[in-house]
Image 1 (cartoon, rainbow, N blue to C red):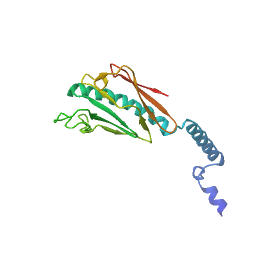
Image 2 (image 1 turned 90 degrees about the horizontal axis):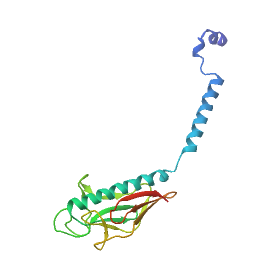
Image 3 (image 1 turned 30 degrees about the vertical axis):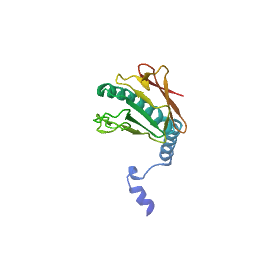
Image 4 (image 1 turned 45 degrees about the vertical axis):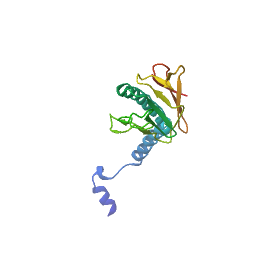
Length: 171
């Protein structure tokens, strides 16, 4: 009776054949093997992105210093960096020396928390009202290097003397 029931069912409703199931499993295996060989540690991907973001923030910091006619500092601190006022003027944007400036583009404090365990190190860099890197009011004559490190990858951001132009490179 069971044999008659199987014979009476249409051929398309019997399910997958063993060959079809093996073929699907083989294709999935090949795709997953290809994907896993291209898998990268997230730290490898995030460091260059964050180095690029720092380069753009340096250019933005320079524009703010020029627009506000203020000396601003790129303050590096472990897993974050911020833009601070060097001198207090008693009025916005630099009421008190050391204040983190409010970024007019976001209306938030200009402080960036780095992602995925990335840390930043290097000297703090001041930018004068002309957007040039300075130290104690004197133009820098040597490039300043800021390093971003993750568990498996390191990048540097180099700030050029005189112009403050920033570039990034893999270590």
